[in-house]
Image (cartoon, rainbow, N blue to C red):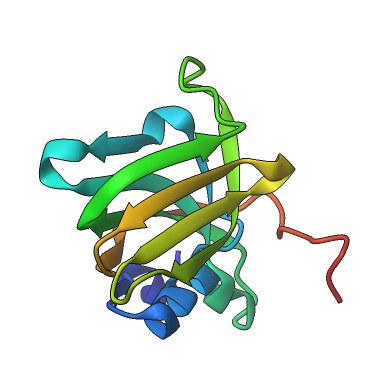
Length: 148
């Protein structure tokens, strides 16, 4: 483990541009259905994921980090192709997008492989991503057959 492994990333997203940065850092993160929590009384949606550390690739590192992501001011949550009764179902996050409604409200979609998705109806964009500490060597670098 290198010294920079001790430098956890912490990002706040308050608009679509910020959310795009969070999405880039979480591309290819993996998680299980059991790692997802919707707290309607608190208007909070949260998950824990094992994100691939893309910024480390430029340094010759191939690692994953345990990372938390939460969204506040969430009014409703819907999902597609996610079996809530299968807590060990593994999801691979591809991107997070925002579709504006009557601003500042809109919909945030977490896009996963195999067409799975989670849609968050939000009052406004208010999200935080934070590395939680553990860092480990990744088995492989994620690849995308449709990419360059």
